[in-house]
Image: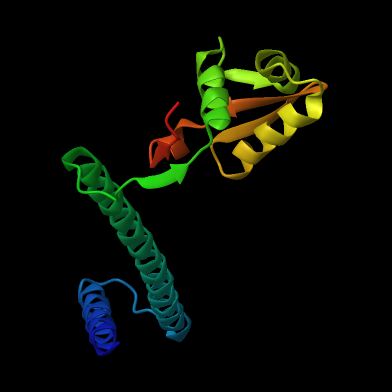
Length: 170
């Protein structure tokens, strides 16, 4: 703040000197009202500079935050490439669940609905198929999509890349 006061005082001295130079050249000497106008302009300029400085500080903080996020992302990607990331999580599955996941991955769109699973697993009703699909959805290996009157289930590769699926030997 002291630096700004010094700059203001220097600007006032410079303006006074400029007024004296104009007076020496034969220009009319400004009256009291124009000196007040100059003072008001200087006050306005200092207030505007303060507002601008606040905006610049805000922008600098936002840029710093963005740089931090970019560095974190680059670090994460580098860890993924070098292999120094979290170990896989072991998830135990029954042979039926593994069979369901393989069926979903092998389907044309990697999406199925309960009736397709009912036919594939030879279930008598749709409830068993829905229960199995919902259980896999609950632990995060499937995503649920409501399309029209049917609920489709799609394999979520994001969860599966962080997990090691353990199933009993067949």
